[in-house]
Length: 217
Image (cartoon, rainbow, N blue to C red; front, side):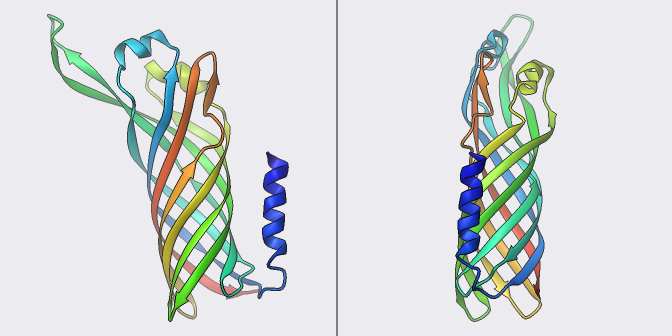
């Protein structure tokens, strides 16, 4: 997998060696909406008390990006971000007679340092660009916060996840700065968990705004 990703990145960069080497950098952030597209733990306690599929959870992400090797329509974007992902689990509350009285929720979260390299294609009108982008992604787990019921399973989660990144957005550019807004989708290629504890996989949406500084090297 690492060899494939390296080959793809090398090809994208080689296609732009004749382009003007502008470097734009900046920060962006927003909300992360994550959901387990597959949740199949084998833990009998979880199956007994948490009988419904986990719901999505909304968290906050922040990223640093650098955009280089610009041509008129294409550029290469590298990004490093803190991107927490989680889910919300529900269970019924009961009175002393065992009757259901309501519903409670337990939120769980895993924090990732996400690294991605994407190829970006854009079309511009005056000072506005519309763009799409896609590329490989690597998530490195750096922390987790789970309820005690889920602690055993969450500690078994894979610490490294390979995935893809794709999205679209708009940016308003002047001579020195740019402001952007984008929507991003992150499907995982690898399972977060795939062993005797069960099988778990996740997909994520991000909505972000950002500001960048235009420069030249």
